[in-house]
Length: 527
Length: 110
Image (cartoon, rainbow over all chains, first blue to last red):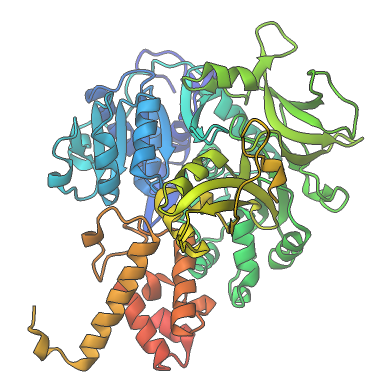
């Protein structure tokens, strides 16, 4: 295969992320790549549709390296949008539609987004957020748009109008190389301001290849995508499926477990990536045995070591499946995995370094510590991010010089230890950041939301161990005199301001918060 | 809209129930445009609720109406709009769901 200029196929050299979609479309054009919301989309369709949308982006002013936000949930349009941004030589960031307008506005300005791709269902939220986004050149909206609500937005266009007449046979001219940015994934920072993790094509390809290698993914895999595409664990299910030429069964979420189980059985799902909340829901279902889940050959869990009771449940529910317990952070995607055969031998461990990654533990002075000593986990490898967008100081904390000149390695901020055999055990975070449901929660962001609730005088938030969530968010509240706020009321108010994984699971009312001598809240005294 | 005196008691009860459900939804979730949550609006599609939200709705129904929502009843046909929840509750409260699996799978309430 040659390109227009007659040179060898690009994927024969060093590929970019989307080359795998293009390659799978060449090899398996008629294969169904994506099943989503009743739609069955072939590789050819996905490639064609993302080519057209990529041209539409370029025509509407998106240039190499521009940031484009995709504000939508798990739909076929989100999948097409993701690949189209890469084909347009731009940088993609998928944002959950549960992100409230004020935060979306912040994100649009933070990365100076030039484009926004979204759906009419989210009009009320994005119209408000995008109206103040100074750098936006185009907003492409799928579905029926209420023009009255979005009339003033710059470059607003309906999806079908945007792609009409655009070429589908190939994407725009390739300008990027593999060390250019492919994506920015936002994660919570300890100050409460979200940080955009910058990832290159090479970063993401290295991670995807490493993970598919240890999972043993094959072209015949049918992978379930119930986790949000805005969450890197969810996003990589799509990337890895298309890298292998496999099939992705994309679900809106796990709101209706019985429906997801029916789909898993009907589609003969082979790969089931989940989180403990999902496994806990399944474990409580009395009707689970009705579904034929015998096709599932592997189940994955991330964020924390699998609790023994979840492991026992998964063994019983998926007798022929290999069960993978994994751990990582957005800044390098994945650090470790526990080989299924070691799960009994190394209880509580999150395993060994993923292929093509190196890990070690350092003390406070940055010196490597011996086995079984707790210290900070350091990660070395091509998966390590390029830094946080526009935050050189935060970047310098995490990325520090490595063994080779000019090289940087990731200081994770996670306290861990390695045993004598090199198996990793996660101990906790070194900062206040809470890891709940696999996502980082900044106490500050939750506290700001709590302080906005009428009747709250002071608020402090900590993480407490939780079998299902890893850590659960717990809030300590000092009420204003006469306030009759209840736990439920506080949770509802938080629900309106925060993404649902940030809402405190527990709310405790206290007469006052413990303070240090300098007047800061003494979090370590809250428990 | 019909004048109030033409509304039958059953319809009035249905209206009252739906208002109560809508009030719960508007109080519990972030709804940018309250007018947009009509009886038939899909709660999931419109982004009003997510997986966690469905659990909240189930908790509300179990607590407020003294029912138990069975696993197989947690399907969009029963829960994905104000109208569907009202219809489901009406069947459930009146004991109209002797075989819940049939009701969940076979009843279209759209």
